[in-house]
Length: 209
Image 1 (spheres, rainbow, N blue to C red):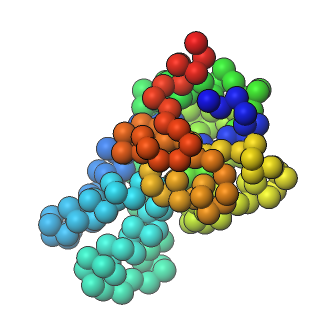
Image 2: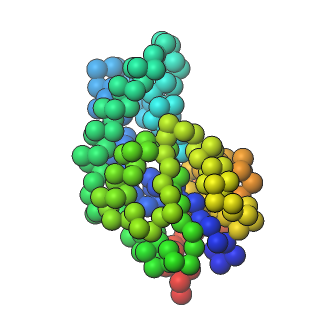
């Protein structure tokens, strides 16, 4: 299914690392002083927008749920607190999704692999380095730059042909990022994407049989 591509852009959360429950907890912790009903609304939004950055979700919490303004400084402070929690709790090799991680390790010399995630960039690079995955990727990009822009940058900086490039993700926002950049999309680890894009990857082990 992936043989026709030379370049694969990977999402991170839910595709390479089973991080979503911990990220849920992170939002609950940084907003622990607010009403539970309001936090629950944010968590629902967060789960429905897996490819959206924490910066956008923090703004959504204030602007749409609390109906309040929030300064850039406040967004940065919340995002910093969130990142501290994530570095502590996600630096855990047992959270690796072995199905995808094993495929990456076995095939990185046959493709140009990149990571583009909604996770904050320095935190993302820290985790990938901690998990000893850095050698397998040509580049790693995260927020606050939007995913759509980072995907575009990967394609343009490397002079990739769009027909030879695809994105693997687990959210509708990943699909949108691929479509806005004119590249193919494959869903993974989210059955709601089974009819979305160019195919659904049930298991990378099946590709190697």
